[in-house]
Image 1 (tube, rainbow, N blue to C red):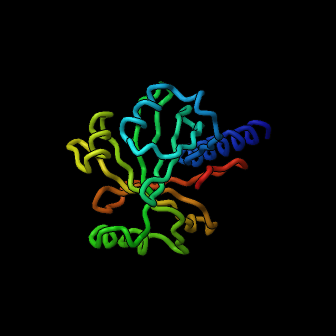
Image 2 (cartoon, rainbow, N blue to C red; image 1 turned 180 degrees about the horizontal axis):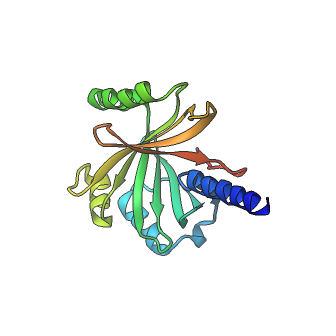
Image 3 (cartoon, helix red, strand yellow; image 1 turned 90 degrees about the horizontal axis):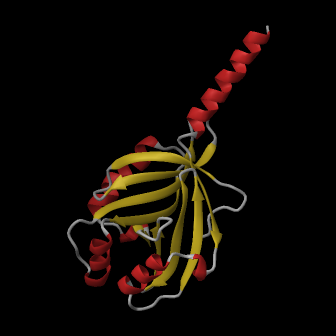
Length: 193
């Protein structure tokens, strides 16, 4: 009986690890500018020369930590993520559904309408990634080769058990589905504008 009980406990622990291993688990905490690597602050200042007012955060996740700068520029909300050494990882810009091109909306709609029940879109962002130089050129000049564009959409939808959950879906530049993962929110959940 003890071996059966131990086997069942082990089974549930393994299933729990597999299920939650696919979750996005992160939380942010506001930090002082002085705690941010100089390299990150310099890149941000060089790239966004209009000097937006920046709020700095430390983002803790299952993969370690990073730094995130959040700011408003030309009536749009941005976030720039940096690794622990201050190297830029990506820049995200919040969008509205109406900001998307029609072809992108059609492709996104195919996935969102067909595969998800009870869907409510919480946030849409376009994510720009590439080398530091390419990203800097892109945001200063409006164009640069070597920039990867993807969409991240946070939405509420029912899971396979019928529970309403928060998800993050990633889509390519044309709006084609790439992947999704469930967002596990901690008590001190992510800070938005």
